[in-house]
Amino acid sequence: MLDGKVIFDPSLYNPEQFLVSAKYPNPTPEDLSKHIILVVHGYSATTFEWQEFKDWSNESTYRISQVLLDGHGRDYDSFKASKWEDWQSAITEEYEKLIALGYTKISIAGSSTGGTLILELVKSGYFNTHLPPKNLFLIDPIVVSSSKLQSIVGIIGPMIVYAESDQTSEENKYWYRFRPYQTINELNDVMKVVRKGLEDEIKLPTETYLKVFHSLHDPVASTTSTVLIYKGLKTSTGAPIDVQLMDSDIHVFTRLSLRSNVTTLQHANQLDAFNQIANKLN
Image (cartoon, rainbow, N blue to C red; front, side, top):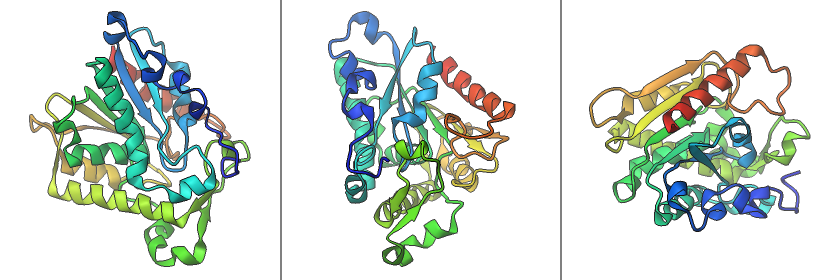
């Protein structure tokens, strides 16, 4: 189990298999001509959450950098002690390494809390002082939770100690089964920061394209999240951002591996999102 004492996520042992900056530390002009997309997983997850996109992709014109959020993919105590700013630092660290190496075409895709952390970067003005991303893709971003327990965990947290996820033994290898209340508080905190930003209005960098995909019946991230993003995120031209609601009841519908009873529609939804993302990178 990921919650055990053995560090599991393979990106910690072999970063060159996951991070473009580690695999190509001395990029050639041909390397630098490629579009790079950072793919960012969600709360309690690991790089596995984007592995299907990696396996599906033909990286002839673009390359994928799979980011492991800080505090994740490690033992339970490391996860428990981590702050949301720690999680986010893994995104900016790889982003800045790629810029320093000379890459000029960089996009970011985030699922669930990965999307929330990306939105916070936009809100904070991070991209005003760094190379703006070409594209931002959000998969089931969580700004408002579908879980009533999550919203009150700050009050009852010390009494529950942790929340246990209902997942299979195979999923236990890639997601924390036991989520300490301290980390749920961190998730609530970054959601609150982003919600407040959206209420006040967040401006996208000029020339940055953003699209949100959201499962219509998401059991974890309420679709109210995407409504708030649609209303509160402003483009430089004044045009609304792109939003696509998927006929799905899966949270992070782009991850189908290890799920049971996957339908033809679920496969079609995943492929639709993958194709749209890849087409923007060519």
